[in-house]
Image (tube, rainbow, N blue to C red):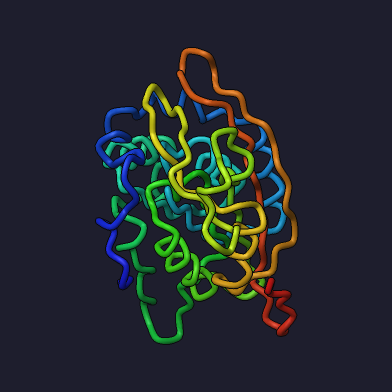
Length: 252
């Protein structure tokens, strides 16, 4: 368990109840993101065939869990919305998919069946799944990723960078310039506020807090359908690796 409680989330962000009511509307809007599908292909090519993949904030299971399962991977998804978990279970039935309803800060990797059995994951993926977390909570969560990944395992992160949202102003940034707070954003008919790292901040989150090495980083534009009543996004993608030979290139 983390020392930072999940009820300390930033104000005015989409809540569990919000996602419980959206369900298939969310999938209709975000389930066919071409940039994300390309990123999942890149990510899958780095994974050990047939390995277990941890999907943090799995949403409806589409496109990420469904695509990975179709490629022969076993997906373990976690989401705090009962509606989203139910849709994931329908999209990726057992045994290819196992989905739990839990807040990301409360979830713990299941213990091994025996002292000799490894329970690490070959991959970890988190796509648009940190928006309800404060900076300290994101850092606490990602600090566990290196323990959850098997040697040589990879992680895929997709988020929005603070500098890529038009409403971000200079006074919103933390003193280190890597995180901005209270950025106005229109999301599925709701006016909310985002709490985001910069592109350099997302990279540092994976490398400094997660102990991983970023291998690829790029951006892709995503324009939601007009009827979704959402702002457009510039999605930042990062693929990182757990290196076991000491070759970590931490950012200062």
